[in-house]
Length: 138
Image 1 (cartoon, rainbow, N blue to C red):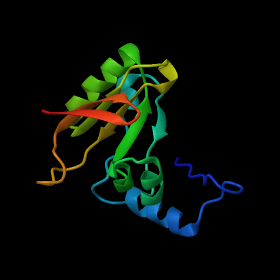
Image 2 (image 1 turned 30 degrees about the vertical axis):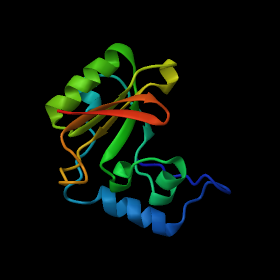
Image 3 (image 1 turned 60 degrees about the vertical axis):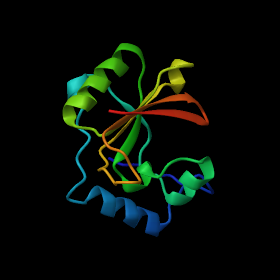
């Protein structure tokens, strides 16, 4: 089940956005997020698909606009376990934020492809602070 809520008004969503999300979720190259069984813990998705306007407003990269990226609220041993699963499953972009309150900790996972001169894959990064990201090519 996918829930889509607008931030404005009564939470209803424009039909164009619903159509965009439906098209992304039905694409042949979109893989199902089924790692919950392997982790044996419910996962809270704090960010999935984002429209380009939202990414621009928050100063974020566009990885979430593809429908191939997810941020999972997870910390401690569960984060370590999910990181191992993500590597085994072939995720190509992994971002780690494990500082601060447990509520604010997460892993970013995506399976985007390499785009020479634009996007390095596979890659791994750590969120040091809200506006500073450190990247390491693996």
